[in-house]
Image (tube, rainbow, N blue to C red):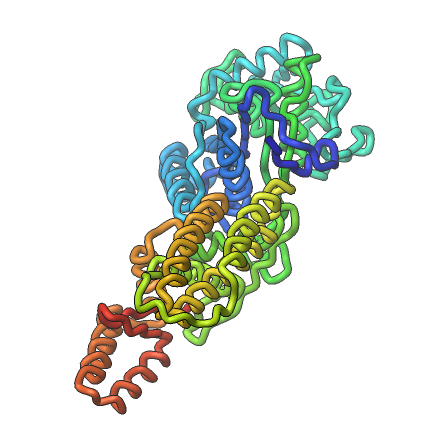
Length: 512
């Protein structure tokens, strides 16, 4: 079996995934749930989703863990602002995140642990670190106790981010605290008063440090030395560096915490890093107000996961923000569904009257084989989704050529029968490819209904008004009033409505 090669941040090289006994453990640093997810959160969730789909397609047994950080100062601050309990806010935002990731086609993790439900594992990890000397307790002047990790006790600190410990300075995400033994040391546990939000521990009431949670939960669900750890590039330092230090310090001599670390690039808005202070912060709901989830997913796949992804914005005439690149991606999804519809409609009709073929059927067989093999090869090569999408596009083009040729040769019953078989093979190939990419998630009817409602709303139209106008045009056609029929067609086109006349009556779609 050929296993995927991934760019390993730890080794700075393309490394094949290690799957002992055909089993793979994948851990994804999930969201801190104090607000709705932004577009970058969606990209971070999509990368492991593509990986898990590929690994399972190869027949491997995958345990996929994506944690939820529901204990954090941001959650506490937001909860105070709106007057709710912290865990009430985080539970609500976690559900919002899960629902939105499901909408964009992300598979549910095997396990989705929350920090609040794993405090016992976290405190046991900290106890072990203190006992062996990698962690130490600080008695604060207010009588509370904190626990810190001694960075200099771990000789390999910096191996993921390639930072030298003696060159690290206070300020670069390192906080000065006079009560720590060393400015580089980071918190494992922070003591708080019993009136605040926290849990009991051997060091009194308090809350765990951010980095400690992932070490504890990844070990609980995947053990030490699991296959792949994923996350955004912003997590390489200090979060993932600190995870490695804790996990390997507490398990000395047994190898790396994770064999492969992969990190996705940033999603930039209008060529700048997304930031609330810049006013260019785009949430997933912002996107889905205008665009279909599958269109958004296609857009996220258009750049290699390690490269930055550019999301440009424009203002529509009604003042709404639009995303041209996602609009284009949605048009590609429209093309996918339209092609599937054409392939499903292939039917043998007519007589045996021969017509010269425009292309040999063998070329379509080759297109099918080539499409499947190229998509697999692209994904095996560090999840190269842009190349995979290009190969999917070529297969869709061949599928439409087959449908066009079948129409030209509709009186050749032998060829039509061959075309029907080829069409069925193409549908199966498209299903294989789109399952790997997480596309073609719905039936054609579901997709059209979903996009029609959204697109009509964005244009200030109602579905009822469109249907009435389409019915008027059909009535004009049936009464052979072609002048009125053409006028109504032009009016519909002005609305962005495209009408297709079929033997079962008119079928209409709204363009993006």
